[in-house]
Length: 403
Image (cartoon, helix red, strand yellow):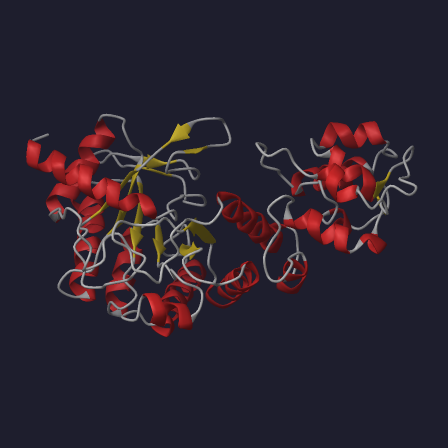
């Protein structure tokens, strides 16, 4: 690799690190044809782990960090004093192919600052994916960051070649966008997301290819005064209205020469973790946005306990539940029981009456579950009502809980 290209790669790979929405779960399994190269496994690109324990990765870069916009929270904003670089379409294509052949990567995540115009930028991004697919027979994973202000037909074309498209909503409210990114239009962003969602549904019905791994978005946490409750309600709205596959929560990171309206420090990383847990309650645990909001205090999720435990402590009158009789819906609300553990419990109790030891074999979260469940040999008399129950169940500071 020549020195100029290596310099561009250092700049534009570093500039891409702030975008978290690059996982590839749900990508279709695919292998290249005779004269092509690459494949997808269906799960786990971007330094993630597949179910069989493999760590796989992708080339995550910006096409350029030059940008017409001047968003206050962005390191690559127009007024930022950072080193700038720009790849050509051919350079990105060649980097992807060469890195794949060397077994460095399994796919490409490509985003960009806005140069000349949204349409011009979107056209360049699409040309990269189109060249990889058509000219080189590349069957590996491709994720393109879509430009919401671009023409719908350009986004339509991008979906023909990308496994996943994403448009970052960035900030959850129109007021926040007006304050920190006044050149962006929240309605236009959500409209473009809705367009992608509609095309994905249509393509599935017609059995044709269009962004088969779905679409995702990213929201910045802690750059404004938005509460956790508002963030979760926004996510629930997007899941329901535009069919998002995933919302990513990215803790705000202070940037050099940042605006005075930005906070001087990042939010606690644990806040990001709690938002992901609350998001899982929506997607996998059948919680409503109102129930998740009920787990918060003043709109903010607790940092010392997970949101499901917080909800259970607020609703102790609904517990304990019987592992041998309760509906799946209520077992999902027991702290310490994950969705898989609940499904195992429901399956196992068809054949035997479950004791506490049986539950222990099905979940690693029995400590948190004990006060909230009844088993054949266990009834937590008085334990659920203990005033110090929260203190007893607080996680160690170095441990992140699972449901």
